[in-house]
Length: 385
Image 1 (cartoon, one colour):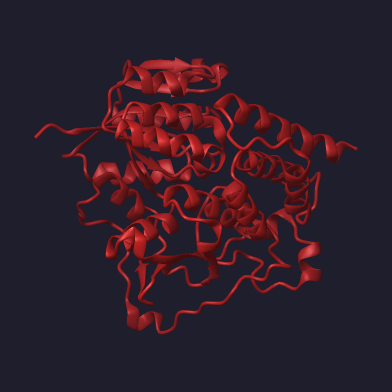
Image 2: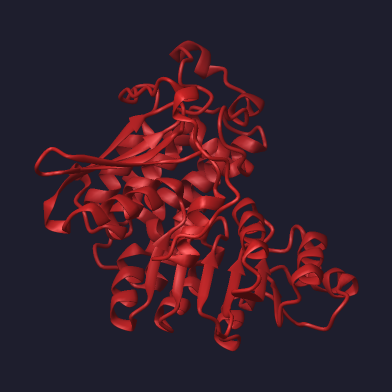
């Protein structure tokens, strides 16, 4: 049987590296035919290319292309520049695209993959948050399959197979609570970047880790779930589960609740997205329920984590609101990492941008990209005032 062909967008990030580990263990079934990254880790991208020998390598920062080419052992085609990721999808045939670029850098390429009818293993929250209204109808028309890689949405995707969609009462997205789960409001006021990056459970990149600290990641996941599972915002709940063992739950109208449990290891949902509907042995650590002994659940504090309400508001409103939520948060997180705003300012600046932006209920891609730029500029401008 011919091997399946896969392209990884964002191969040098946490999800990308885990995906390559999974694919290496399944090398008898999969060929990595394309690798892509923004370019800040050009040396790592070259190492990955030398290890997996893809046909084509794409780097978004054109100025890093000479460094990349100088370190390549083989002679893959090298695409460089702002359109490199899109060009990779257009020129290299594949069965699956792993969309793992942080931010909106992979938006056009992911939409193109959907247009071409590819399976999309979606780890990029921003694609659905910004353009879920475009991606999901496009996938339905082309026959593309969108399978979530986020542990929470993968859990929901799996649990939904226990019943009919019409029987779903609501879903619960679990949250670790991040590093500030037990902090007082007064302590959070003085939270530092080092504090925010000290995640108790997951090993993630800095932006995603800060989103976990503010629980903006749950706001984004509420919007994702709205588009992935075609649910209204009031049927999507967030529940804090510090152990990160139950990855999410589905409640059906007969009162049954179906949960997906597993060790906190991203290789499991990545592999499932690649092999669905098959389940294969995975290298993740197995659960010992007798060692866990107790699982805790409690509601998030809306005062401590105001971002969650922003997620519900945006999921209800739709239109351009998701693009503003995502872009304003990214800009505010970047400013926080640079020491230019306080931790509390991240949610405040995002809320302000949502209130000020010129809302459009049925935006085009150009509309979404325009409001994305506006939100980033507005957050930066407000900080400089």
